[in-house]
Image (cartoon, one colour):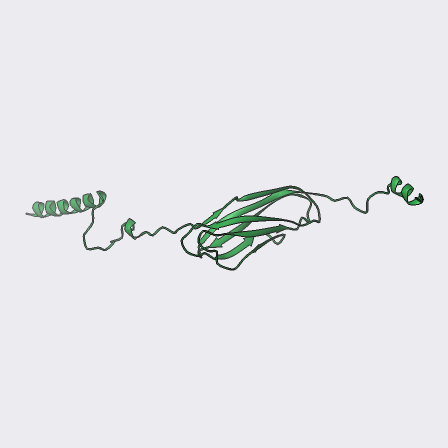
Length: 165
């Protein structure tokens, strides 16, 4: 008798494990510790598109700030507002409108770089929108050292100054 009861419980246990492996579960509408139901997952619409994600200033003179405007577009069906535009360091300054971007409309993010330090640079700017979504844009280039002092004397200019016409 004990063997029959044991066999009965083993068969019930085996059928339960088999049903879970085949993707079946109870029909009570509840998720009993298994993977989340796919029907409950709502994809977040990515409404923001960038015309480009990187700009290369190439060679720029030291001490002369440079600027570039990135174009963003709201491809959603409702207005969208940028929550934040944040640069990776203080030498890079993003500027953007705090107003909502209408559906189908475009806007600009103006990024400035102060070019104080000589050498190559690569700076990242993070755009946060829809509260949790982010995109990243990048600026890069090489800052060349500007010559110190004024330009050297020009003998031709001195000659012209002495002439009376």
